Image (cartoon, rainbow, N blue to C red; front, side, top):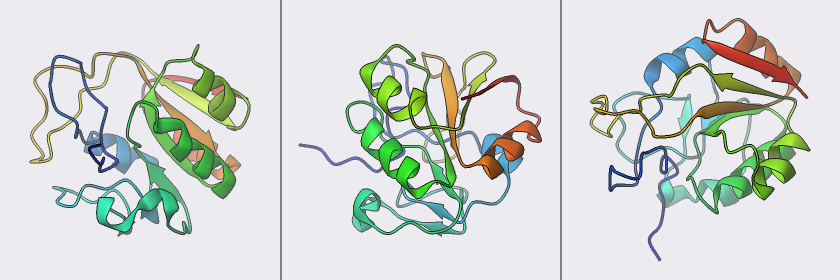
Length: 164
């Protein structure tokens, strides 16, 4: 079974690869993060002060501070969200598949808020180059911790914040 770097799954099914990066303007607008447990080994920009890669096994590592989490998409996504929920201080970027069992158990029942982006995001290649097409599905930020709600409110990102 192929290992994921954690920056995976943010893609259209037409793109035929796994690793996609969060648009840097999103990270910048949300303020300083202390840890990204799903960072690629080689990255064109930092997403946090500290980065864990596939070599560090971010899912099973200790997390400290405010966490940015762009988890592997698919079955593994909700394991990362459950860990973020237990940690209680961070924001995750996932596809807005609001009807799924995982979304119900890890987001609707545990998160403090969800921010739904207006329009679809266009992710970046690990080289830093912006992808030619959008991610192929709507995206959202899943927010754990009241301090993170405030950072989303002040971010200037276009969309709708729903308090849970």
